Length: 507
Image (cartoon, rainbow, N blue to C red):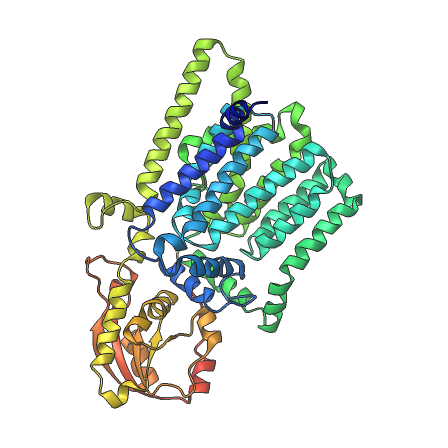
């Protein structure tokens, strides 16, 4: 084959189309992700990235490790810190298209499946912020792809790759255990149980445990503190109603409303289509985690990474159906499909991408259903206020002043922006900040950010209101409305070791 024909073949290949779609999506995120500021969740991950460990209170270690790589590559660039999250979603898009190909889909099915994932609200949001959710999504999709390769080829060696990715998933987000439950159920309930006799399956199991082992050891050394954290967070979510919309939010969070027919068709494909019995395991791979999350009263987006395999199967089934129609009906169905994907994508992009100008009618509409953006506003302003309060203290007192932060956003902001103002690191009792302890010698005067007056007066002998949390845009968020007061306090009523031992809390 001549070089020109080879290049033409590459350009026209299905995989190239999928890669171009993924690159376009990564470029879209790169161009829009610098609009506001770091989210409070990103601030704590940034801080954890500077304190690498085999575990953290709120999550396993992989996301902070990836964050450390981005810090080394891009510094504290907002857009740079979010690049790998966007890339993870681009790879998930490609893998979904490849799943459709493995299931027998041609280019139409592959592109439809990839675009259906690209416009899924949770997937879009996972490319906007750097969070462990972004990489958890990728691992679920990759496992689904590998399981399809296993079932199609009947080559048990795929279990090794599956085990490796499960290990990475457990090092990213503990809800991977629910997906593993789906794999176990699928193996036991389908002819795939023949693999129970295969040494390759057990090699995969061993490899997953080996990859997860460092975090397991860390948990053991820290009294499995993450279990206490997860129990608290789950109870809080139930108490404030964050889990009450699990079912009704599926079509608008986990998958785009315009792609509901696709993932329903995907379920049909795995469970009902007679000539696809070999893929029955994939159906259980969705149903079992879905039921477990529902029974456990989990948040609706936890199951979102399981939808791409349904979208891939649904696109294949839809493609087969279209080929059975007359030319006129086929054109109509294709037109409706592309129109639905376009409209669904535009609506999702308008509501989820960080492109709405602050304090405009568009911004107001977005913030009614999405509280993420307003929690990205005002962190540099907060740190500047704290620095001014520090500078107002007598020179002798400034040498022994510390900053006590109430939540991880405040602590992360102090640690990110504080050094430019000569501020000391933040002290906090929340999550992994509590494990890092306090300075030796401990500070004598403390600037309290994110605490109530009642806490300040109970904890210290004297406290004075010194400032307020505000931001230059006048945006109302958690910092400005729930705990806006900043205090300067002196005289801790307890010895520091005693105070710190009871200062641990989760959030």
